[in-house]
Image (cartoon, rainbow, N blue to C red):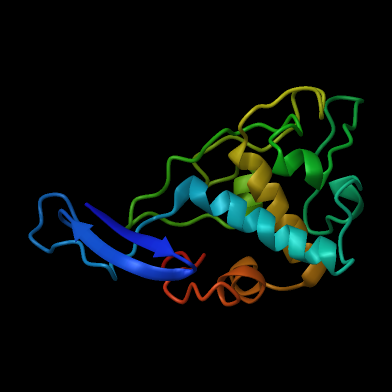
Length: 182
């Protein structure tokens, strides 16, 4: 199913919904049905990061390992690559794990650190740098996980709460959330 809104001059001009909320079920999609945002959430996370840059709390061009406290991007053998938030936001930091397959509703959810380290119950490998940062574009969901950890470490606040304050509430996105499970 799908729900959509047409925005004109900053206001919702038209809303519509089509299809079923769950395949094989009978409940229809409504304009209030929540959908998993997946990669659409990445630019929202970057906007939250930019709000903290604007406030002078973080530097776009500093090495993220200079501000990470609860986890650090590990070295590659004897090489410790320098990676920045600017590179992470542009998918050019050389970070691994392009995407995440998700978790069944009855499966245990990993912590952010477990995702970053590739530890159970994470279902993806550890996030690492495996190419020179700043050299090429390569889509990296793992970079967004590093960004999340930077924001949490710098502010000492949960990511969902922080993004609600910095982005979702100012935009009036009261039905959106980074909570998992809801």
